[in-house]
Image (cartoon, rainbow, N blue to C red):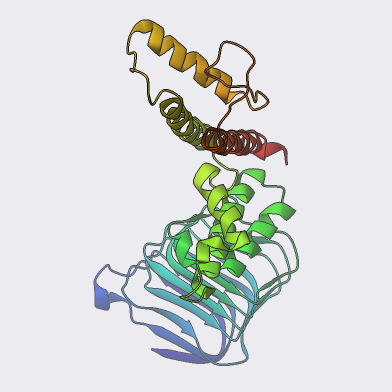
Length: 318
């Protein structure tokens, strides 16, 4: 079905659930004051596909299950797309939104905003999407992405995730901001790995080393329990190696005294500022290079892990 010309009010409502119950609609060079779709369930969709189409007052789409919504080369004032889409793809391209935009409480398969302008209040809250792409999109007023969930963030590009992060920062949403900051860093890490030549060891690049460590220990400062757990486990591994080296020629003692000696030494080893031999009763330094090598690697791990733990604790105070 194709529609054009000038229309004051157009409403589609409560079409049956069968696939052929609601046809796809293409709007071409049309001017509408009010357009509303309510309670539409179909495997087809709607498309604005020609230049100079305008919706002067409002577009409302709610309680619908539509395969796709394409708003292309459209000038529009108020826009309301709300309430529980299922596997709907929403594409907005070369369009201008002059007044309020509310795209809230939906379930989308894909969001794709390209070369479009949002001049007034924009709310894209409480949505769940598989993937999203924002390319050369301009938000002139505050844009709210509160409780915006991306199910497959690894399929999103760095610019998209950074744009959402920046809008969350403007609206002082510290909780979601940290999540999207982590997503952005993961996307940057993926980009660096993808750009590495096959003869280079990608993980040796200095940015990748930092990103890999941050991701491994604390998900880029968002998970304090993971950071502390990794610190305990890895430092225990280094300490165990040191313990074996120092007792290599001795019989291992699995008695209570032996366990106490092992654990008390580990607690000494875990103190970042203690550089004495953790297995000695006196304040003595280690005497062999291999012992110092393992000891220092363990201390670096503990220091870095505790730093990441503290940073993750403080994430809501940034």
